[in-house]
Amino acid sequence: MLAMKVWLLGTAGEWLIINFLKGGRICQNTLMGKSNSVMRRLLSLAVIFSFINLQGAAAASLGELSHIHNIRVHQNKIFLGTHEGLYQYFSPTKVVKIKPDSFDVMGLATNQSTLFVSGHPGVNSKFAQPVGVLSSADNGVTWKQVSLKGEVDFHMLEVGKADMYGVDSGKGDLMYSANLGKSWSNQGVNTYGDIAIDSSKAGLAFGLKKGQIYKSTDAFKSEKVIKSKLAFSAIELVGKRLYAVSGNNLYLSTNGAASWATLSTFDKSIGVISASESMLLVAAGDKILTSRDLGKSFK
Image (cartoon, rainbow, N blue to C red):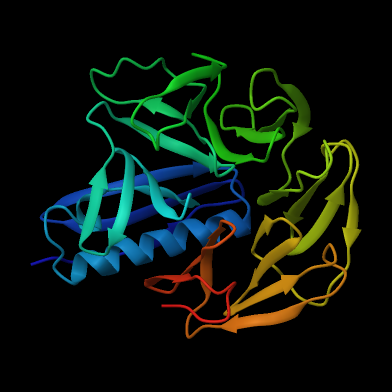
């Protein structure tokens, strides 16, 4: 018998998600200083994977994972950053752990050639505490230390061709790298719930806060709001295709957020979005859905 509960508690800056209750085991995660858009995505993940538990998933399923922090499309494969390590997703009843040496993958990012992670080491792990930034060119089979070993745990991580952003979970600062994480500069206290990098120029990116999209040309030393009547909760940029989530709707802009077209509407609100050149993924309600026709249809 499996029971599931999801609670949100807390005051400004401190939240608690209790993901699910299985056989008397409570799995919980404390989140410090998360914005509403980040909380929406994390709650969506909690609901998705708790729902899958209720469906009676087998041992090698999502139901065995206590925390799922990230979902990313990488080289048209779907990867999960979890408390137990990095997994590849095939279906609700089939997930495969990439390698035995596990670590808590708090930050997960891809530029489609390389995976980048940050987090904490697992029990008897060879990784430092915290791991700093690691990279993998073979889908997580082997990892290379990039920087910040034993110094930083990034809970939000975004990467482009060269630019990289991470949110320091200890200080709450936004960190920026112009050389794929080799060196970093502190951009001040993070105010963004999501970041989408435009790799056409160094320092060019879009940031999301309080439902609005901001554009920066200098790695968020300065910003300019792009006003919209819509309130967004997540953004993703692939080339010139800027995807944005508002409630149950997925929108597309091809002119830098100046105007929007409705791409798809779902039965439930969208919590997660990730994309490559040929695959678009959304987590809507209790379902993970993918599109291979630029968002015209999902399954």
